[in-house]
Every structure is written in structure tokens, then in C-alpha cells.
Amino acid sequence: MEDRFADTMSLGEILPKIMGDVVGVNAMEGLRAIRVVETWRNVLGSTMGRYSSKERFERGVLYASIQLPALRQELFMNRTSIIKKINEQMGIDIVKSLILR
Image (cartoon, rainbow, N blue to C red; front, side, top):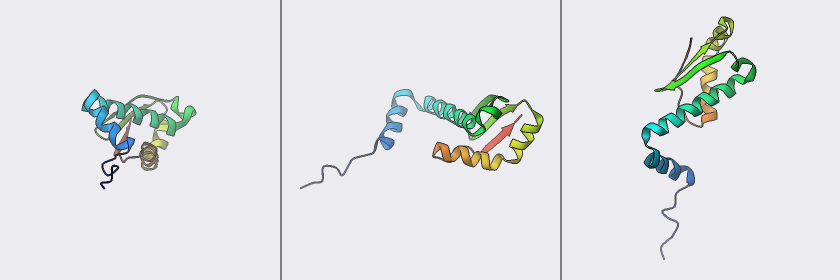
């Protein structure tokens, strides 16, 4: 008797395939970019997040404008740990670099 569950897949495996077919690859990248920016804001927190604007994510690089020079320098010095936190919350190694302006 054959195992009827041999070809089963988890929802986590099926959903990206379905979404990619329905909304297209570009839309999936857009959704992923939105999630990266939201995660960036969560990592910063509400206090520091007030000073961040014009965030965008493209090709592994997260860009953000920081209005306070001292905060920009502090974030720059801690960019490796920030990238690590974002990637951990995303569940994949998606952010490769952080550019602060």
C-alpha cells in the first residue's frame, strides 16, 4: 500500500509558490521589501524610528535617511548587529548591507 502522504508539502512550502504564480515575482519582491522596512522600524523601536524616513529595500541593500547625525553615526557603528537582527526576524538572510543617509 502506498503512503498517501508521501507527496505532502507544508504550507510554508506551498504558499510562496502559489503567491509567485498569482501575483508574480515582482510583486513577491515588493512584498518582501515592505516586510524588510517594517522589520527595520521594529528593530529601531518607536523612539529612534521617528528619525528614520525614506526607507527602501533593493537587491539586498536597505536604505534609510536618518535625520540626526549622532543617531546616524550610532546606527552606522552598529549596522552589523542591526542587519543580523533584521535577518533573524525575517527568518532568512535577506539584508546584506545597510546604507544610512
